Length: 124
Image 1 (cartoon, rainbow, N blue to C red):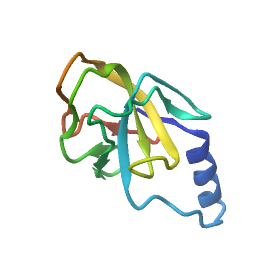
Image 2 (cartoon, rainbow, N blue to C red):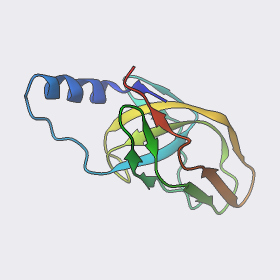
Image 3 (tube, rainbow, N blue to C red):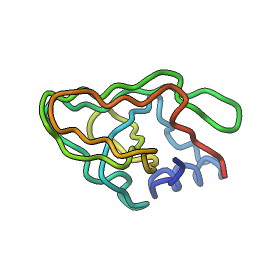
């Protein structure tokens, strides 16, 4: 996963030019059905108990999520093939998106789990 949104690209360009952008203090992971560099993730679910999950990354160079993430659903919500990073639990700005290793089908109540170290962010 390393497709940066336009927002993230602009933020990094300002940082490289010493223009001191406001960098995110927390990052949240969302599920979705696709994405674009302009908008970030698309097809994020609403309702059915869904909520973005706060994530912490660690590493030198390549970044990996520290903890297991669990998206809990109270009812069917569809199929998700992408995840995205945001700077807020709701709304906020898209940072990056990328495909899931496998489709997450939510056909009823249940949990979508993303293992620790399954999300990687590369500088290349």
